[in-house]
Amino acid sequence: MKNRNTNTLFLLVLLLTSCNPRVVTDMLTNEWPATKPDSVYLFHKTDAIPPESQEIGKVKVVDTGFSLNGSFNQVMQLAINATAEKGGNGLVITEHRWPDGHSTIHRVWGTMLRIPESTFMYNEVSDSVEYSALKQILPEEEYAEFMEYKATKQFYEQQQKELEERVERQQEIIRQAPRNVLRISAGPTLMTSKYMVDNHQYRNRVGIDICVDYDHVWKSGFGFGINYLHNYTSFDEGVKSRVNYIGPSAVFAFSRTKNFRCDLAWGIGYCHYSDSYEGYSIAQNRVGLMMRVGAEWRVAKHLALGAQINVFSVRLKKPEGLELEKNEFYGIEHFGLQGGLRYYF
Image 1 (cartoon, one colour):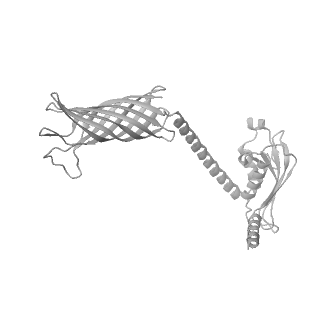
Image 2 (cartoon, one colour):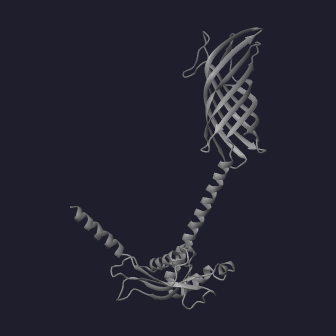
Image 3 (cartoon, one colour):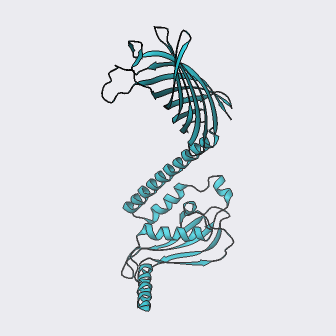
């Protein structure tokens, strides 16, 4: 059974390879390293060959007797590939035979050249030479088809090149992005939750936030942080509310340019809440939640100006008699906008 499988595989490989035309090379020298197929210029035998070009060998693409893949473009590409593999950068088509009674495919013969680099520097060889040579050996319809193929190929190669350049620029921005950031920010906040002081229910009360944040971000853009927030809000009755929060956070940051940077952070930590009035104070220790969305603009190597939106939430013990709506909790929710300095190190 093993020998039968081996024989079947051998016959399958033989059948597949026999479908392709045969490429034969006869080298005069092997001193040149391989080149790229796109760098091989085509010439017709009647064209003027660039001066000081060196013949390095012959190539022919012919029928194996079972060849199926033998359009003109296919056999020409095989000849070009063989020329590049042998170190050539020029190919003179000396003979082209159309499908006939002897073969069902196109067949070509050519001379492989090594053209001096100085020739390219002075533009003595150009695409127009390549296309004029092809036009002499191709009928008008096949020449137009070949030109369309070349234009499409060049378009996609240019697109790929531009994509690679964009990726490289983005990678350079990532390499230059700060890994450690210290933020000091301050700004107004708006309390959006219900809050009771004596028998007065407040909502949409304005206070002030002071924030100090440290972030460490890896090249992937993800990282971690430590966040401190102090909120101060006063009420008409003379009551002063203070919230102090500190805790870790998960961070994601990204840079579109080397100067502009955005970041997101989500955290959970320890919250100390207190109310004070004429020397009297009550306090609660709770778990707080925070979210930050920020953007900053670098103004020096280690310094940036930034703004951020902070959302902070902490649940508190509900006063007796306070009615809450469905899915509503009693506590403090702040929505704040802060600005300040960022130090990169």
